Amino acid sequence: MEPVRTCIGCRSRAPRSSLLRVVAHDSAVVADESATMPGRGAWLHPSIECMNKALQRKAFGRALRVSGALDTVEFARRLENRLNG
Image (cartoon, rainbow, N blue to C red; front, top):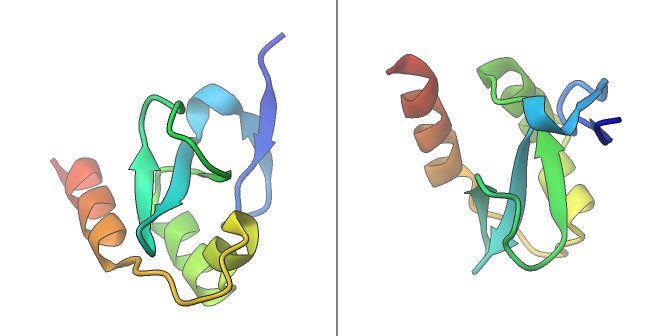
């Protein structure tokens, strides 16, 4: 049975293989494609809608347990590029 995780954007549960793991690295949100980077991770559907919901709810900082501000601009740009082509 495949592990189930919760998306920090839409809060729905999904198989781990359909979600993207993200971690905080040097005060920035980074996609962990292989799900092997050290540190606390959070799971997100690889979609613009879920990313925007997570940004609105300020879910990245809470889920990754980071007290300061996180830079999500580069992560958002890369996710959009990945989805668009």
